[in-house]
Image (cartoon, rainbow, N blue to C red):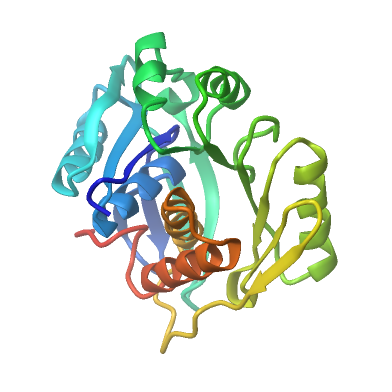
Length: 263
């Protein structure tokens, strides 16, 4: 996978746990995806923004430590994004508040978009400019995926990632809406119930990978995306891509944070 070049665009954050736990981790959909690619052995690039503060330094340090290319990491006036996660006595983690800060103002430059478009596949995380980014990248002929739970729109998407609960009807509705909106392939993750896919004609289903115990589900969806996209960029079938995503997500559920790191 050393020759596979991938890029993630959008959010980074510092996940701040409170309640039953008191620690913090580097995260964010786009950043987690890029780090997971690098851990798989791909050449991963991350394009996003941090503030000129200590948290921004932590984000940059985590990317560098995991060998993610940071040429597209921009420092903007303001604060680095944070996510407050309440940890219940039961261990359940609930996102209490997202503070997107400078991530909500980041739009790649024309030069960055040209560079991003040289990658085999590009994933868009949270971005208020997702539609514009998709249009720009599509005009450059690049394959695109997006986490549609955090960014709106389906046009120009090769893969739309959605997230649903245990209700099967809701998951199927999400998949149809993504295809009707212009996506070529829709993936809906359902936590412990696995994932489904729809390409406008055929349905696919893959169960979640069983693990001894769940430590933390934070970032598991991002890890699924990373595994799926890496396999898709190598030309693998939909089912094989879904299995790859499920395998990476299962590993993430067995440690704290969206990727292995010191809290």
